[in-house]
Image (cartoon, helix red, strand yellow):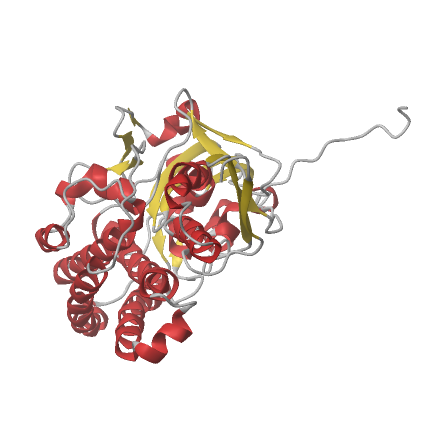
Length: 434
């Protein structure tokens, strides 16, 4: 490698949601640069929400992602309720946690079985893997379906749920409707436990970094919808102070904005950060499974994120069963909402990490401004740093194996690229100028 330049380049990333590429340049045996390029066309969600009524936000934001629509709905309704001075608690709050459980189960399972496991088992994709591991894939599909069943029942349909509204739901399920779901979830919990054991046996590269972990933290529960934004570096802020500590920037190679923590730089959101900052709030079964899988209360190896995601699937099954067991149908499906001017902030924990929403409403309840900061936008700089940090230790591999390791490094994050591309900045040009 001395005196030579090697370029590892992938023009179209496979087994990620959306369109992205990366390029790593190694000169004289040292990684000179690593760039993640996102070229998915911008979709302008922040812009075309302006002028819409606040009540339209859940249905509009759900269309940002077909895999994690609940996360966008939940962040939008919490932010709107913050702006409107409304608090939702009791069974309605529990139902919001329940539908989030469903999304974590289906989204994490999709990633674990269909997108990430082929990397560890030596297959180009899930179809090839299914030929040799048909029973494993069938179990993964059954586990994913349990998550879809939750979203379908509580949300009205599996993709882009239609039952969520500011203030609660259009309709709440009865206990009788939830009872069959509990039986499904008991089987799903067993499958989730098998999943943790399965992925714990994979061969993991020995790579770690001292990440700046950022996630929500709630004193009484593993975070889904509520809490303060904390880090392992001492950050502990209200969600409304997000913009005082984080900012979005534009880099030429990406149609998605990137995020950085002021005075710190890159940071990590997602399952590893949630786990590291909230391990003691996992259910006892999930904690025990994590320990038996070889994890301590802190994990800094991004390749082991597949284990952490599996532990979170197990937790979501446990939490969903708890909610169903305690559920009593509320008297009303939603609290009363009165439009007013205001600014609302909210952050929830999407499967891929912290998701921040901010809205400014006019007196009639119309949306004057919208800001949405997806997890993948926040993780882009960290992905590039992983590539810069880890590639140097794999230069003895042949080109195909080296490229695979780089792709796997990106897939550790389960990037949802389409979610992150919704901005456009226009500049007026005076055509009379020379």
